[in-house]
Length: 37
Image 1 (cartoon, one colour):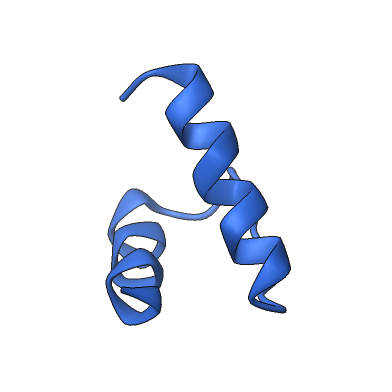
Image 2 (cartoon, one colour):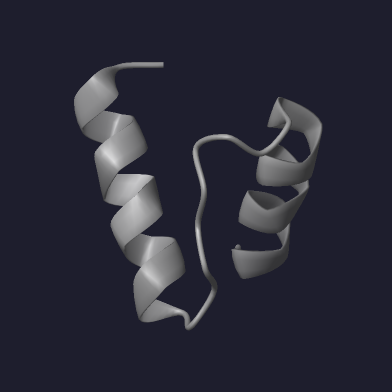
């Protein structure tokens, strides 16, 4: 995944009121992204 795309996803998480952390396991991060969609 491109760094720019990752940054945009993090911004979406923040706007959704979710505390995004790049240190989270990928599985947890992807599950969170699926819930937002």
